[in-house]
Amino acid sequence: MSVTKKELTELVAKKANLTNKASKEALRVFLNGIRDSLKRGEKVVLTGFGTFSLRDRKTRKGRNPKTGETITISARKAPGFTPGKSFKKFVR
Picture 1: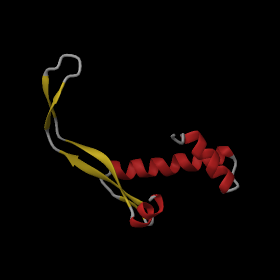
Picture 2: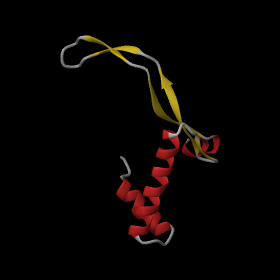
Picture 3: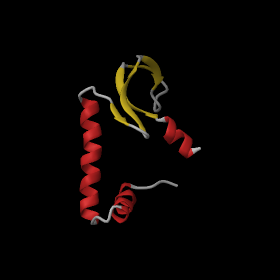
Picture 4: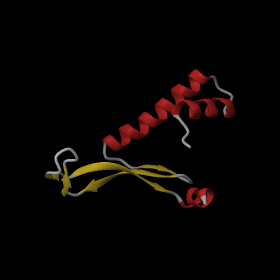
């Protein structure tokens, strides 16, 4: 089961005694802050939760799913998340 962005917004609104509109805006600003920081090449460290960062992906071989042809997938950066110790402990 997954929690949608809408459900998360409603949960935050209820817990923080905010309107759904205010909660939605706060979540939007928070997520955009993470996205924008990663775009600038910065890490986002949320103590007790985890770290968002960019990871380097090497050039690799892949297959075109339609034709089966071997293709080269170029090197790129991809977003990554490393959970913090207390977060991992909580989830277990």
